[in-house]
Image (tube, rainbow, N blue to C red; front, side, top):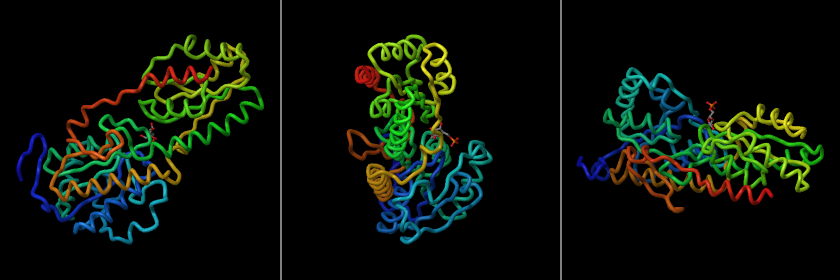
Length: 334
Ligand code: F6P
């Protein structure tokens, strides 16, 4: 083993056994990523162990060997065949120690983790204890700073878009305002994208502190004065509550309003082509890194290309919202 820059570089072909897990919120395309890790892994001569239920499976030894056929017929399926979990125990010293002893028992020499921010923080903790890791970004939120794209984002956007189209039909019929709450945790990437694709009159984001009077009520009244008779408002879950905003709109403008919280429907469904292809390419890249002995890295997308970056450096990058999208959305909602 030698130190190259910030990276730990092992000899090429130093590892024989990979463990793969999905952790945190599931995202459409995770199965395509698992499939790519297993198939490319076996192609390159690795033994691949599947760890079920995220870091919980690592702690409790829920581990099974994957074959070429374990990943047949999954590329089109949402969710994750390995299942997933949010593991409070893994965040403790005791949990980490248990996980470390389990990797030894199963002979896992390197871990591929597919998930979001929390998953990568867990991976970093393991790497500090000497467990080599590689991460693949999978979350519908698209909120990982080091990558332009996370697996599942496009499918979630299309699910939300389908809902907006349906909601718009009924909003038109009743001349109502529909207020739709979408996921994204502390980020508004889903909201801003579907705000544009769905032609929303107003988008409420966590990245921009909205004033209800000037940023929600006033634009809706102006739209009404320009002749609009039905309205779509998108609220990112981190930016406010659709129910509360809908009530305020109705009280202040007299426009009949209805709130819809889309919830976990956004996490399911067959992945889009973009998610299947990205997940497949990212999975293959993860295996190539392992073959080269390059670990403690995250696979990412930069300028549309698959890249990789040191995990610690990656976790320090904060994803910025392109605020220009907000002004574009406003112009297009005139
Ligand atoms: O990170 C994905 C996500 O769906 C977020 O958008 C949302 O805030 C959160 O997970 C919901 O988590 P859970 O499924 O644990 O309720």
